[in-house]
Length: 443
Image 1 (cartoon, rainbow, N blue to C red):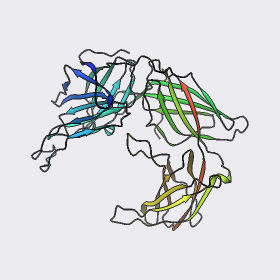
Image 2 (cartoon, rainbow, N blue to C red):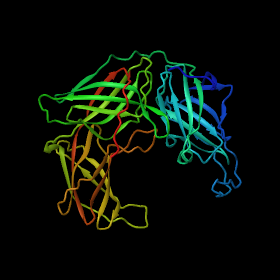
Image 3 (cartoon, rainbow, N blue to C red):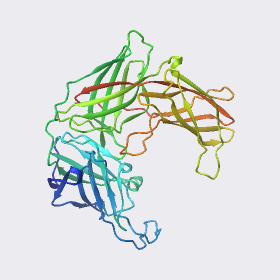
Image 4 (spheres, helix red, strand yellow):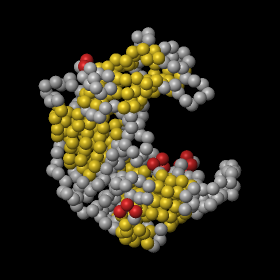
């Protein structure tokens, strides 16, 4: 689908070199539009990499909130942002004459695929009594296409009032589209074997539209794996991590499986991404990490007993943290370092423990197999997360679990499984799909 440029302000762009050797989109002509109620939006910069800075007002005198609240006199800091030196993401920076609203940004390619960044993905800060800087980072965008449509959508309180969100549209011309990858991408690789199990990339589909609760549709992508093990059909594998990168420099490295995704009995695992996979003739590389979910041998299990359960200390934000090591017989020189504390409690009913695996040796996976309290009762409520995202520009950090145990528990015993991560690399072109997004009945 070609971009509709009718009634849309276009920016004539030329390439320029900024600090760090990054290419920036320098725009000429109209760069500002307004919503019907007078809120103005100006694009300050569209660039690859950084840095970006903006000089703020010296001070503000009693700005009045719409609810009638009055803030104190205070100076505003100059806004600046510096990404990593090798960051090749697309950054779009807006100056908006409204400080009490939230905004989403939609990037649309020539095929009509939509990448949506929500307000909580935004970077920015207030730079005057009536305006703020808002920036959006697109680590993946259609690098090979000559033009991109950018929509800024009003959200937040606007949507809570049941009003249709307003949006402004801009067209950005890419001054240096990448026509082909250098060096050429390696050939397709659609299958790999681990411990006698053949795992195949059965599909890499994009362009599937999903209704967006904020209005309109958004583009999703689907990844399908199949697993077959004729020698040991009871062996169960799970996907713990997936990195995606294409041959033009795009990446979806912020995608992680929140819980280990288990292959169902059918042998086909289906994953949905909230981002499109750009086409344009490039090839995607998927690096997938798998772990076993069936019964592990005793040498890969570790039991830690008599871990005290502390009550929550009222009136303080500081938790009493306890540290311990997890050591499996098969990996005696590779202990896992862990920390736990009582996160919250309902006296006499439920205690919730927060367990963080602070240091897991490279190439190993550690997961909870069983938790018992001092009465021998086995808890079934363990909420697992492979990783915690602490910074949108950083890799994901330590695994974390939340564990609910009976409120009268004094100690707990935890059994862990430690095993080697099995890594496979797949390469394939994405395919535009006409399949509908599967509807799920309300519970």
